[in-house]
Image (cartoon, rainbow, N blue to C red):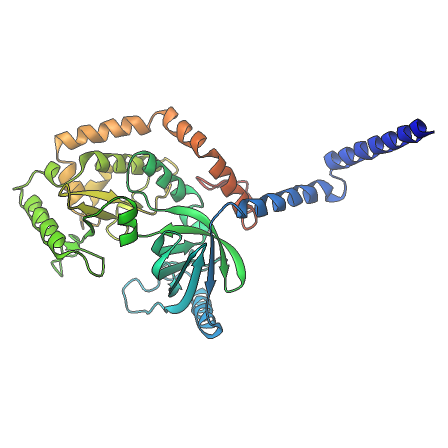
Length: 383
């Protein structure tokens, strides 16, 4: 009797299993899609557990003020905002927590164009008194504003090349009680310099394009070292006058790698003065690059190498540095060598293999907001 009942149970389970498989593949009543979505939901919440968590708490009144400004921007459409400094970006106070780190700070809406605020979640710029997730200045970005994982992957390539890449990663944010996935972009601050091992360094921006105010360099930190500022400015003036060899002021190897990676991406956006920072290293008396906002602008079509495209920069929005470098035969040898390295198929194959698990996790995290997304690195989609 036992074996007879056992055979019936096995036969019943087999029939049910075959029926389930048949329904799945026939996709009767959309069962296949529903089951796939359930698998993706489970994968999503498992992926969320693996990424940093940030909690942001604001008073209701200040939160409503921030949302009101966002809604006002949406009503005006795709019109540049606050670029010329005549419009105010509202800053509101907030409390932050990430793991054991707690801090107070402020938030404002990030970006000058509506790709940052027309989608949910909208992008935010954060300043905190003490580091949160390793930064005291950072952006919480709608992933699409950076081509999803395009800029993220560029920073991984920078790290592998020995460059000072920004911290770029997906984070799970509790924003006043509502959970959202953001792309975390660490920015240029003293914490960054310390993490990269600089004990005597300062951030520098080139302002050679601004001929009306006669500003050549800007040191964006609140209280930069006076000694470093003077030394950097003096060396820069000597470079401009021709009395100092560019090799004695610029890290050729790192600049060559930086330009080559930009050419690989067919992007120049990270070279503009408002995105690019140099680190003046007081130990070597040389500058080295830190860029952001890599794009794949032309999908590899009709884009000249930076060797050529910088020549069209009549207003010097890329600064004076490229002009000096690409006139130097020695530097161009470094540059050509790096171009050859990044143009090898094995270069990208190796990097993609190294970060494959992170890329797959990124796809899972992006699925909830962008279910049609096929390739998050270059934003190819199925429709």
